[in-house]
Length: 81
Image 1 (spheres, rainbow, N blue to C red):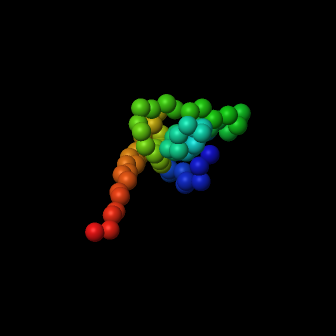
Image 2: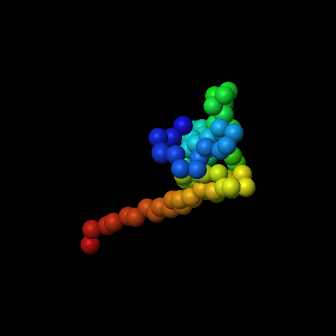
Image 3: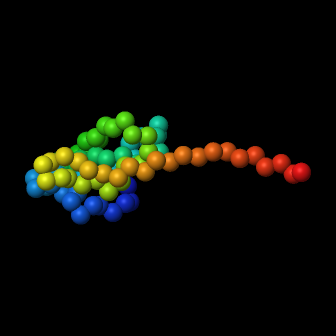
């Protein structure tokens, strides 16, 4: 489970909570899971997004809305002239 704050709408009426999770050693992106506080089990929500998914919340019709943060990088090589 990530150390990121929960969104204000992250707790559904039935008590299930959207949390930020780190899945495994194959990705370093933050993902979203649904935590059932009654069982203590978290279920990952799969996406095709290659980046961090943060501040997930429930919409009024039960869907999930979250912010995606795309991370890109490049390597620069500086040579003295």
